[in-house]
Length: 115
Image 1 (cartoon, rainbow, N blue to C red):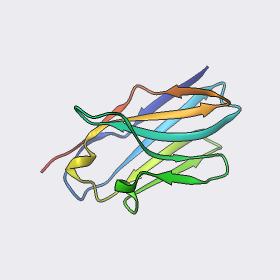
Image 2 (image 1 turned 90 degrees about the horizontal axis):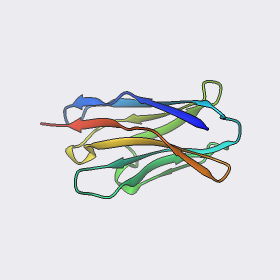
Image 3 (image 1 turned 135 degrees about the vertical axis):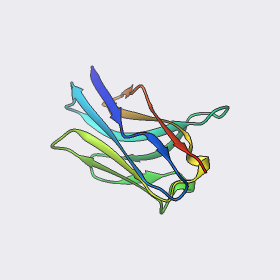
Image 4 (image 1 turned 45 degrees about the vertical axis):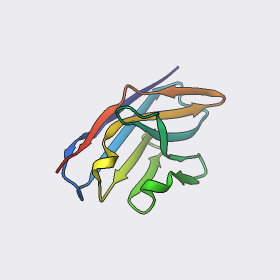
């Protein structure tokens, strides 16, 4: 089992920044892909960004150039630096990791961008 603890959500004005963190523990050997998803009210959950063990990243189009995903293998943690936040980025952000063929998800952290 892999445990995930997310942190870093909060309230921010448009144009502001937040940094999300997701610390993993437990059976972390074999974790390949680490990523962030989000779910806004009334919308389906969507991939925001992910990063594999080789450092290859993938972003959804709406966050390219604004968000940066990174991982610290020594700390078994994945980060999401979010800049130039917009009201449409408001959502619950979930960390998700893939260990071999099994997916593990966190409880989520709320990000609210308000004017």
